[in-house]
Structures are given as C-alpha cells and as structure tokens.
Image (cartoon, rainbow, N blue to C red; front, side, top):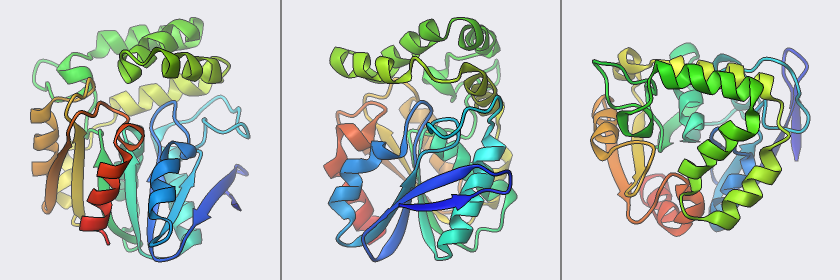
Length: 265
C-alpha cells in the first residue's frame, strides 16, 4: 500500500499490484477501490493494477465538502506520483472524474480511457434525454435528492441501491449496512457537482483512444445514450456487455477482463 498526501493534507492509500502496463481504476458513487478486486486479481500477472478509495468514500476523510473538481485534483496527484503512461478506467462517477481531469490537466500521463456506465452529462432537460436513469432524472429529482441526502440519508440510500442492485436483495442489504453511516454533508456536495457537470462540449478535444462500456440491462443509461457518448469522441469504440446492469466489474468480470486484454494488452 502506497500513501500520498494531497496539497490540502488528505492522505490517499493506493493499492498497486502486478507489473506491466498501468491500469488505474476509479470507482463510482457510493463505491470503493476494492470494487475492482476481481479484475485486479485477473489482470495483475500481466498489468500493473492501481486503485484507491476516492475522497469522501474513505474512512480517513470526514470533511464537509467534496466535489468532482477535488476528486480530479486527487487523480492528478496520484498520476503524478505514479509517473508513467496509464490507462484510466472510470466506473460511473469515476468516469466523470476522468472527464474532469482531461478537461483541466495535461493528458501526457494518460494512455487511453475506458468509461464503464458513465455519462458526459447526467441531468436531463427538455433538450437532452441521454442522462441518468435512462433520461428521466431532472432538476426536480436532484433537488429532492439533495434534501434527502442532507435530511434523510437512509431513504436516499435505499432508493439509489434499489436501482443499483435491482433484485439482488442480499447484496443490497450488505451495501446499505456498510453505507448508512457515511457523512451526508460531503455526499450532498459531491452528488450535486456530479449531476450538474456537463462535458458535452469538451469531448471532441479529448484525443485519447476511448472505450465506452455499457451493461446490456443497464437501469442507468440507455443504449442510444451510450452510443451517442462514444460517437462524441474523436477515436472511440462502443462495447455492450451482455446480461449486465450497472456494476459490470462485479457482475461480469471475465468479460471486462477480455475487453481490457484485447484492447489494452
């Protein structure tokens, strides 16, 4: 376990395993670096695998504010520490962190990017329907969720986990018990910053090879939305994983392993 300290004093514990081309995994909202433990195990003999708990999702951090810009700054400091060409693999929120990083920092340490169930814009409106929850999540839903996060965290958590796990009752219960004591103030600022982020006009300026990965049964983003996301880049491929929902790295790790070996290895 390697530890780096950010400019504002936050300590990031980085898990690094294996040797070879560097792969850095960024987990999603309410996730943790260990969400990629199966993929790390499958690939560590041939790749250097890197992951960490992002700020707000670590037991070491209980500050009152986190947003996507802070997480991108943390990523910048991690990449600077690693100091080698790295493939960024962002799941859901992790993809937003990658987009924020590419928008604001030099990409010389980035080899290419894999976006798993991510979106360049989450909030839907009358002119945009490619966002969260298959085009249904609007500013009204955001305002309601901000209220719940700050005043009734458990209700928000149950609603979000219902979409994340669908009929997997046991996994949902375990996640709820692990997450119900999280600091809701930092979650409020982070969720708001994620939902209000908009990278649509930045995608054409991102010149790295990109792979957009969607679960066939995703409750988060439609197939059309993810294909539009992929087509917005200069160089990209769209890949759909059969019989997967949102947590592809846990639901279909072997398929994700094959994708990485074929396109990165």
